Image 1 (cartoon, one colour):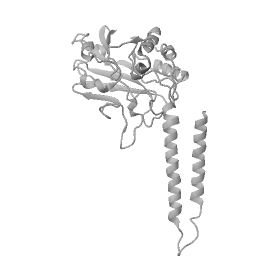
Image 2 (cartoon, rainbow, N blue to C red):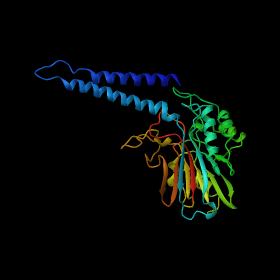
Image 3 (tube, rainbow, N blue to C red):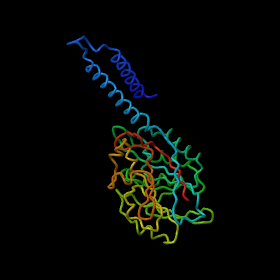
Image 4 (cartoon, rainbow, N blue to C red):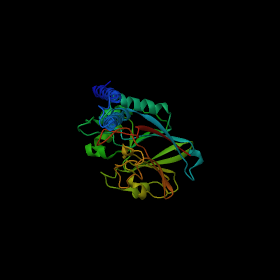
Length: 314
């Protein structure tokens, strides 16, 4: 148990004891024939509000970012080849090694939990790096790659790079992944065969940090082929040709904070909440955005639990 967590629990217990004291406390002496109950009510309300704020902060900073769930999702795609029905793809994204709670132990947990799902194919959607900041520290990509090399799927493990990887050194991140048996796709395509049927993966370069060659890269595959495109940033979705039925993306972290009735007030996307998380169907093709595992900018997650996605396509 971390010192921060112990301090947080101590603060909560202190507020609870203070609340109990205020509830039991007399409102004060009689004045003009009645007691000043409103003062007591204000004190109790302030303590309750403080307790709620502290509990939310503890959850968002110390508990939820350290959780990890398996998110099962199924997408129905028109004209999807029947030979490829039931294909299960594991999506892992935005690991941000060196960020809060993302250490070697968490990397091992990610690998073990993913392998337990027995996916047919594993896709890594970028941002393995964290910067040196007040809440994170840089971990060299060789460390992350050495852990991720233990991922297992019969159709292999494929990856793309994200903006944080290129802000550090995309070439170094790519080299580390490839040296550990993970295919990296930067405006590249790869044929995967399952049940004697070909499926083409198209890895597209990061929108924020790399030149875009979307049409040229997709054109490397014949228009009648079955294609799944991979990108770090979902904002390219409107530019994806109609012959690509599915685009897989990450980057947004689901906004990291999802407030009741409001939604996700801050999303790193030009489209706001539109492509922040989950399944989107638009203009005849599909987008799926995973909320990823790590955090960025602020070390907080609230109602956006870190996830490994198991996506089944029919």
